[in-house]
Length: 381
Length: 79
Image (tube, rainbow over all chains, first blue to last red; front, side, top):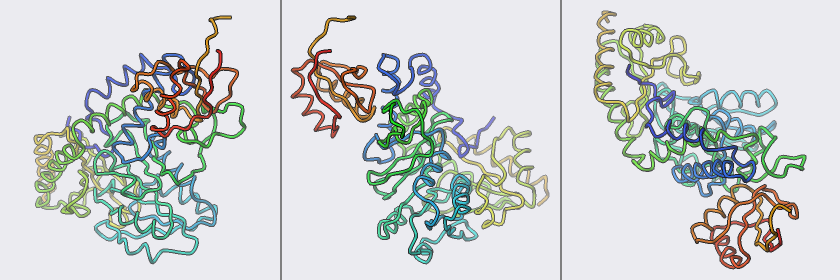
């Protein structure tokens, strides 16, 4: 089997991740809940994970790395914790439903929403931000890297815009954390939301949000915190303030191993390896008759995500044949990002997404190219 | 009485993160001490306290300042 679906989850993980999860299950108790050795061991593991994430993502204080079970929860926490009825928020057509749906729901309650359009290459124009400004604009919520095209948004530029206009800036780093340079301070991001199981190489069920020092969020969930047990209100201090309930310490042990692996091997080195594979794939398929590639595939900075279609075939059909006949795992459909598919003109049939890990091989790429060639021949395009 | 009472330096914190940070810096400095449940005589935001011999107070205070940890309480008491 050839796994080319790293944008969905990092199936090809370094072995240290699973080992760390198993070891944690056998050695740690409940984090932040008491002072016996197993509990302390769990708390230390979680704290080490905060430090590692803070180091990788340029967060000033590890205590402001708050863990959730995925990026969707982190984004809901950030969006619902910062914005409400009467506020105006700007987002983009590149967004995943984990951004769009919380915003749509708030819009039903009176939030004003502007969605910046994407062009036919799936790119937004940052100058549209100025035109969208209103007196009640409170913030911008924006994808760092598209999960459909792999194209990258100039988040530092948007960060400057937000600082100039005193706006909150929420960055969805689901596709970029562990892959591109994500530095909360350089970006000027109020909140950076990440998932643990993609570029950070951790297990599913891990993720979080990094909250800038001057930002206060209303928690999405309140409850057990391990501190201030007699107070009726959930504590405000971070990270406990945004971490009601027992954390996934076993998963976070795995995330710590994944982030540790990235720090040890160098994010840029791993990124270059997977980009070489993605570029080889693009070069190998772009001239095959009937192949349509989406997005700006020649952009100098992008992620190793490539979406394509073959002739007029349904993307799901192509992905199914790739899996059944060639053992190649890809992701077809709308990728939970409806608006960019509208911009690309692929709403009806979706697209086939291949996404590479640094743990894929040139042979994987060669076989994928050959499979696409064979399918194109079969279609007699 | 389960254990013989001793005079100890006890530091309490607003958050678990601060308690763990304190444990880390104390270890780096080689200070004798460890994390314990917060004694009943004190109340704190975090259920963990750091406890060490009273003579560690000066070094620990310095380390906490360096680490930018603001304790909720820092007291010497018999526990």
